[in-house]
Image (tube, rainbow, N blue to C red; front, side, top):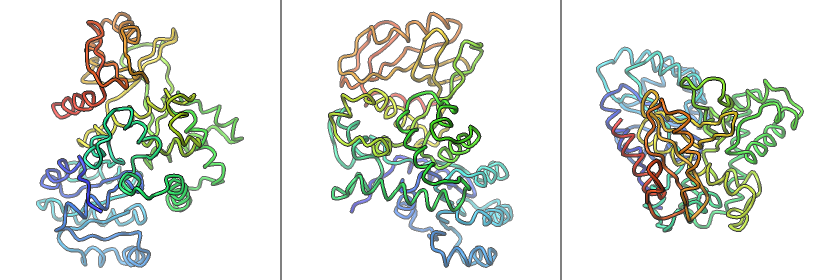
Length: 403
């Protein structure tokens, strides 16, 4: 099976020339190991998924590091986070050497964040997500935005699902969830009932693209609000979900304060909610929410694949003004974006963007973007352009690179 080049490759090598080490996190099976072993063949590869290797490393960390070559990839570091303190000592002793170690993990756990804080300027942090639309295009050209949306929902974006035509999607996701629960959750976090946690994921998937209401989940599952908060944090750390927070800059008390929930893979949403066919996907009750989730997940990948942290927000006021996405360019300078599951965008769909510009006229607000299933890009009015998805991805990529 041929290797599909990842967009993040263009970021990795320059970082290794500038930093002593690199940490790449991302959800399990997003392709971290394949990416590194295919593109950095001069690095020794060691995985801590191997119980014998892990036991030896934990028992004698100094011997473990002394046995490595000058440059090494240490995979699944979350299985032995205590090794990071020894790595820190070695990196501090070799400050002039670049690209010594690359750590990967299926979670953004606190140890890596702390390592990033303590080795500021000497370690770079990246996130690798499942395939983006642009990466899938290099493997198979599906044609329209609608076809890529359907692919993302009914097949998913994980590399194995995209590249292996014989793979049964339902079986794969079932195994993925079971492995995730058993290996990444039970072994590291004390979450209580795995059955309740899986039910929580299903409820969360059914409410993708909605504001997070902790008390509703607590009532539905018969658990406490602090437990819901803890479970949300776990799913965030494992890069299963993303919380889009409301815009905050001097907008006063009129703004909804709760974040909105998005999954980083629409295929997982469809699996958890039992959605399996195109008819229900395009015309069912979750259609609009899934398209919005798809647009947000692809937007996040643009940032992550360029080594940037997202500066993304949404807006909802108490008088029902809502903007799906605000892309912050600088302080009080934003691009308003609306997502519509529609092939014929019109000026009425830009009403919220027009209203946003009037209500918050003190802000520096760029021309708004209305993203839909349309394959054309054209102006709707002076305030908003209807932009097809490919142009949206390219325009945002160019902007991020220029920042």
